[in-house]
Image 1 (cartoon, rainbow, N blue to C red):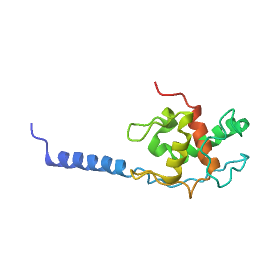
Image 2 (tube, rainbow, N blue to C red):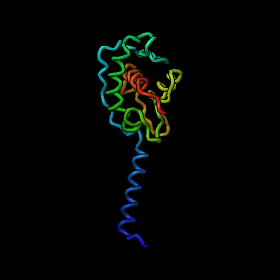
Image 3 (cartoon, rainbow, N blue to C red):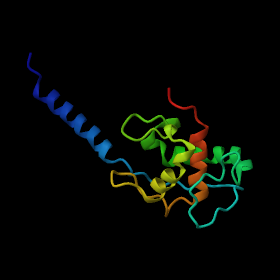
Image 4 (cartoon, one colour):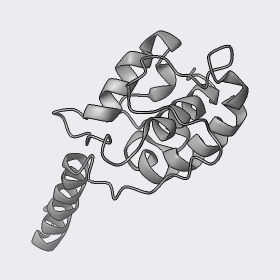
Length: 142
């Protein structure tokens, strides 16, 4: 049975629209992050999450997770998925380990050539590490 031309055109338009969403990865309107009473981390780039329990500011972990949840929802979820459950087009951030801190901060600060924007002019380290703390608080993928 032949498919009517209008249905073919509609399907082609839908596919083109979906492809546009894939290529739009990273076109996010940055949302401000109120980092509350988290200690100011300064300008020197840290390579380990200071808010992880057992680290320099580990006593702020719960607060960082709460701030990070909101920051993630406003700035990351559109591409990396709700609760960091990637749909497969972007890395599943829940799979990062504590050994991946340097990788994480480098990617967030500098972006990638594959579509992730640089966030270093938008988010300070407090916000970035709070997001990392939130992602670490989530259950690992099965």
